[in-house]
Length: 319
Image 1 (cartoon, rainbow, N blue to C red):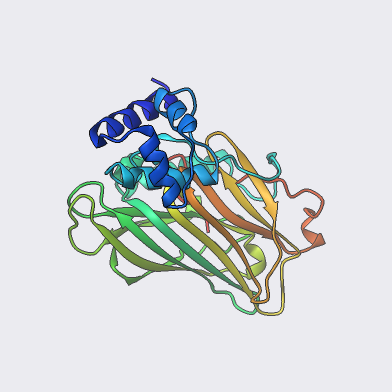
Image 2: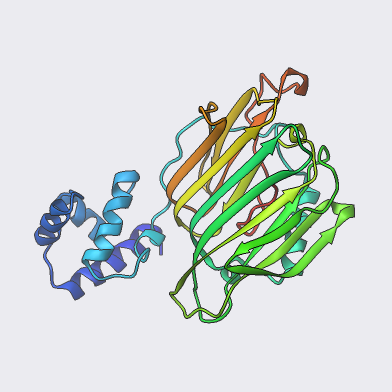
């Protein structure tokens, strides 16, 4: 069964249970500032087409609420919005070799994550990377809102593979609030480190919790050229930020997005706070990130179409 038919079947069942007509649904959506025509609703219900684009994603959320459906029950059946920006080609700008993929997969298994189904559902994700050229301590603070998919302890992995340019020193993982650290991985010979993040307390299926943690690496700022994160499921909101402190500032900065069907990069400039930012709504599964180059000596000014290698199971693979 393809995506169109799965979506159509779920929508048909919900409409039948609600007892509403397509005209009634269209009128209520319009009243909630989510206008969609009866003809479009009919196409969605029959499977002739799927919702697409940012506006339709908002309509999906309104439909779920109007029809009494669980959040994301329709949204999860629709692919992410088409990515806008330059198509990317693999180059040396940022990336891991095949051995990096193998190390990443092995680290996930060591931490007890055999598949994405064992991760909590990340609903909101905010990461701020503080890159300080006057220090050898680079800091990344993440705050995550998760929904429990089953009753028990919610867990997420955090795995990082350091680039050859970075000091091969184990990052410091520090829980800030709402979580503790369980199992750890430390493989200096493969430049691979990670931890199991465990949300405090036992959650019932469907419950939501928020937690925060900090990662500190011990490298010069110029050894770092990006920060990435991969999502196994669609998130409501993703906010990625990098703030540059100290005397040096990057010359070129980009936003990076990747899904199973498309990937893109778009240029971005430092704002008045010396930050770059990427914000996404209803994104995933896929990877997002920010990346930059420090100067002409890198030999990369004329070729910024790089593609990082994300972990195979939808998680971050490097700071």
